Length: 238
Image (cartoon, rainbow, N blue to C red; front, side, top):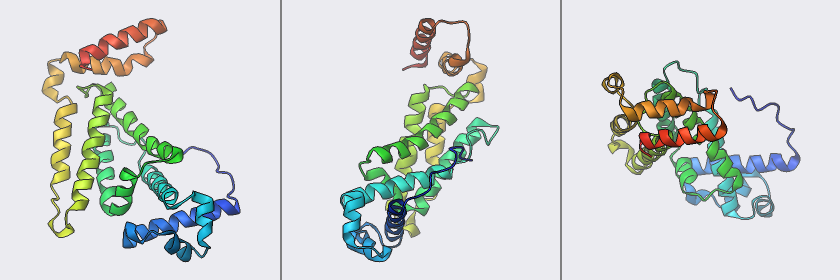
């Protein structure tokens, strides 16, 4: 559930902008990127082509707005971070959502990950990454992460997006449906501590767990917390 509060009412300009973005996204999904021209979008939206230039600057600005829209739709579909009691299972659910969104929206997904974002687009993309960071932090606090949180986030993002781009490049009839599961197992082995490692109290895993809990530990001065965090990151292998 999004708790951002009530949205301000749309102006006529906002409504036209939203309509143009939605039409461009529909053309992108139905006919591919070549179909998204200023003329075709304006015609389908029932406006004059100069309107696009006034609202977006040029076609690239329109495409940036479509990518921003894609990130907003994608992020809205993510369940609450604490929806699953098992943080590892929640992390896997996020992985599956990422792969599924990309396969259902291949042209939009490619645009989202190949278009240089503007400030609004960067903010929309960062919202999704923040959710991933929160999921990874839950795993770390549960003592199941054996690499630093930043490394885990970067690896999951790189692997998940790489899987989607690889799969959407394959003809659908020949698509390797096992690739997502295989990639997840590789990521899981790289970043998650298994029960045997937990039983042995692997120092790096213990350091990652304690580092994740450090903000909630009282009794340290800011300087002491920063120093302790630095030591823990060294043990964790950063």
